[in-house]
Structures are given as C-alpha cells and as structure tokens.
Image (cartoon, rainbow, N blue to C red):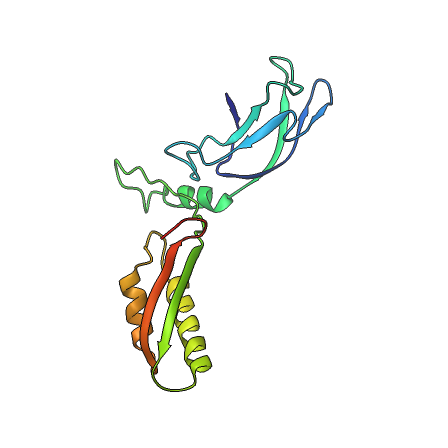
Length: 171
C-alpha cells in the first residue's frame, strides 16, 4: 500500500522520518518511492508517495511520519488558476499532467547530390533536430514529416531510415 503525499505529482523524496521515535528511514532499504502509477499519473490527482518495504524498518501504526519531498507545483498552480470563477465552467473537470520527455533514436543514410557532403549533413542534422524539438505536447514524430523537412534541403538526393524509434526500442 502506498502512503501518499499531500501535493502531487511527486518528483523526489529527500527524507522520511518518524516523529515519535526520531528514526530516519533509508530509501531502498526501508521504503521505495512510488510515482507515475495509475490513470492519474503525473497529475494533480496522482497518488504518488512511498511504499514500506517488508524487510525494512517501519514506523508503528498510528505514528506520525514526516516525508520531505519536492513536487511539480506548476500542476497545482494551473489547477487553482482554472478553478477561478472567470475560467470555471459548470461540469468541467480539468486534469493537468506533467510532461515527460521521450528520447528518439534516429539513424539514416544520406545520399548527397550537390554541394559539400559535410555541410549538407550538418544542415540535415540541424533541420531534423529543430523539427523534433519544435513539436508540441502530444504530437508524434512522423517519418513522413521528417522526410518533408529533409527533402527541402539543397543537395539531398536520398534519405533512407535504418532506425526511427523511441530510445531503447526498435523501429
């Protein structure tokens, strides 16, 4: 069972201690940090917290436990802002989530038809990076769109993918 913290989403736990005994518990020995679980993960409605490990030291039932942690306060600020009368809509149930970074693995063969190959390669690299980094939350990286970006660069003859996937995956 997870002992939730008051403010969500949880980023890190810096310390856990018992008020009654003064004991400080060790992460990985006495407890583990639990984040990003469930349908409301990484949102203001998340249930992030700590889970006591069976082999570790535990506080007694009913003891007060102090959990020092950091959380993403922007999520709660957005939630409070849109609950103001000006922005409130009857029946609206807004859910704000923390963005998560996804790293892309891209490997391709470039055939150059004109110009300095090193210059064309650098132009292609910069154009692809700029395109990917300009994507908004929730937008997908599409092969077709990268092809369109690369094909507009003078000197590119052909562009063939060896890999386009989420880092650590296959594609």
